[in-house]
Picture 1 (tube, helix red, strand yellow):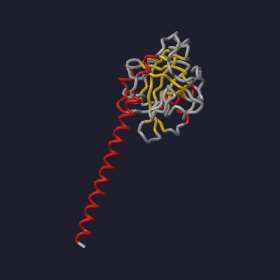
Picture 2 (tube, rainbow, N blue to C red):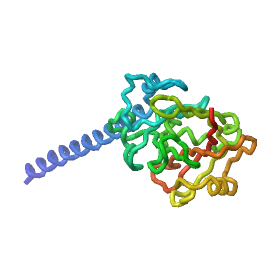
Picture 3 (cartoon, rainbow, N blue to C red):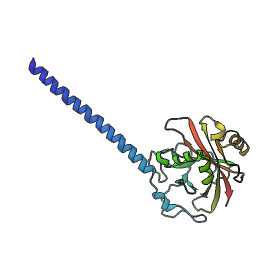
Length: 235
């Protein structure tokens, strides 16, 4: 009987060791996965393919045929190729090269026209930590920061023949079910919403007949969105 309990203790100890090793492997994998996702999101290798206004994207740029523009907000980390799928799910977890990526791409709402001629256009991007991708939008909830970072550019099309200046003028948080903010609506409707509910609103920026919104989640699991509004000007 004594031998039986000795063997039971040995088996128990080995089982506990196995459980510990499995738990350790899960933790290590979780850390690796977080590191991998962050580094993929922080990959700026695509910048070498950034077009100059009036010039086409380099011929060797491996972007898919869904590339529609390049957006830049001056003196920030927002400097990305813009994709547009036939629905708003396509580029959530696909990078501009067409490869699977948890951090996805910056993409234009599938309901918008690819030449940004709509009154109201919407760009989406994941909210990554440390200001990566559209995680950088958090800073625009600060009035002084928004005033100091109020310019940008939008180069449209693979040929780069059309370019616009951006004037960043407002920011706000909304619920995802706030249809007016996250649907391509009339300029009058979105302008009224901004005037009534914007948390930061710089009225000194010249107005335009076209508005571009940069949209991201405020938390990993949330129905709230952070929106940064830009006027689009003819370059």
